[in-house]
Structure formats: structure tokens, C-alpha cells
Amino acid sequence: MGSKIISGITSDKSVRIYVVDTTEMVEQSRIIHKATPVSTAALGRVISATSLMGRMLKSEKESITIQVKGNSDIKSIMGIGVESGNVKAYISNPDVVRPAKANGKIDVGGAVGDGHMIVIKDLGLKEPFIGRSQLVTGEIAEDLAAYYMQSEQQPSVVSLGVLMDQEIGGVVAAGGIIIQPLPNAEEDVIDKIERSIEGLPAISTLISEGKSVEEIARIALKEFDVEIMSEKSVELFCDCSRVRVEKALVSLGTTELTDILETDGQAELSCHFCNKKYLFDGENIKNIISGLDGK
Ligand code: ZN
Image (cartoon, rainbow, N blue to C red):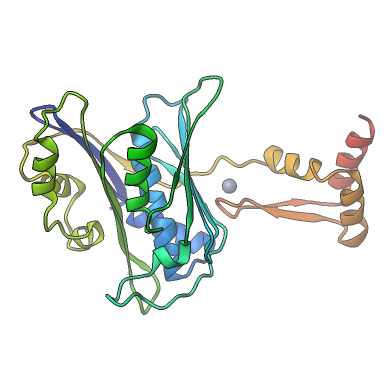
């Protein structure tokens, strides 16, 4: 099956919609980060949001970063997306355990806490665009909608969801929806969107029932006629390399590197995003130190 994303527009050109099924991406990231159900749910929502916002970019040179920084157990989640909708993602605490909320749902908001959402759009210009907004609930979807309103004055409906198998801990379904009225839309379009999404089941429920992203777009905008503009598969990616990891070692400086050399004789670094391991043996570290001393 694989993860899939679509973009669509209503035939009256008043509203655009993006829908992504990230079930496979989120399950893969759960395995990479060895994440608990609560951490997976939070990470998965950020992955879906990043994929949707990435797909809104205009060219391959652009990228988007969503950072959620909270004062509770999770601390920090980061998603980096590109125009294809592919995402790399990181969570600082994959081990969070919390009781479910009174309604039986995973307590993502409690695990994130109060804090900020930071969105960095690198559009290939000199300076990236950086937007920052206060977290509203820590549930990610409401926070992203608030970000859009505060930072971009863009009304948006955002739905993000991850359904976990509570016994096995695996991802049953994950995905997201973003609906936005376009600038030329008539005034009553917001009401029409609200009528459309009234009673809309959670995105993860719709995916777990076997609905395709295209069907979900039509259900979510049932008051409109939706034209699908693009459909493609999406996946997790990583662009880490030995050269990049070596830069992190270089930044430690001579004293610390000499200490590592004398204590461990080698250094193993793993990529925060994909967990790939890079081993630097004693000879490698000596070379880095002599490179530093030569400066
Ligand atoms: Zn990596």
C-alpha cells in the first residue's frame, strides 16, 4: 500500500485540501525511534503535518521545518519536509508513558505541555521565514491551525491523527488533513467548510476503515465538488552522511576529542533522524585532531 498524499481544489476554486495517509511512515518511525504509543502518536501527528505543509511548497529547493517545543515529558519534536511530501522526523523523548485521557484517547497534549510551535520555511532565499506561535492544546492539530491564523492570517482546518494498537503498540492508521479557503473565496465559504466537516470522523478512523485519501477529501468537503490536483506516494527520508556527522565531531574541539580518544579510543555517532550509526576509529579521530591543530 504505502503512504499517500493528495491535493485537491473545489470546482468553484474557493477551497484547497491536502490529505495524507502516513500509516506506513509513522510505523517506520516508531520502529526507528523505538517509541512508546504516546510518543509515536505525537511524532506521527508532526510527521503528517510536515508532509502536508511540505507538499504545499513550490519547488524542490524549498523545505519546511515544524518544531514543537513543550514543557512536559516530550520536550521537542521536529519534522523536516520537502516539496515531494517526504519527511524526516525526530523526537527528543521516545519513551513517554502516560495514562489515557478520560475519553480513552492518547494524551498527546499532556505529553507535550505548554510551549511553542515554530515553523521555518526555507524558500531558497537569503533568510528563511520563521513563524512562531504559542501552543494551544499541545495536540498539534489545533496548534497548527493557531499557527496559520497568527503567523500567516490564514484560516485553516487541520486534522491529524494516529491510531495505535494498544496491545501490540503498532500503528494501525495515521494521517492528516488541511483545508484552507483561498484568498478569492466568497465570505460564506467558511460556513460551508464548517457544515462539511461537521461530524467528520477522525482521520485515523477513516483510514482504518480502508478509505482512500481521495475518498477522505470528498467526505471532508462533502458540501463542495472536489477536483483532485495531484496524487503521489510519500515516505520517510534522511540525508545524513559521514561528512555531516564528522562536522559534529569537529565542533567538539581538540580537548574533548583527545579525551574521547584516550577514554574510548573511538566514537560512534548515530543520526537523530534515521538512527544510522557512524563509527570513527582512533585513526579517524587522530586525523580530525591534527586537522584542528593545523588551523
Ligand atoms: Zn540519518
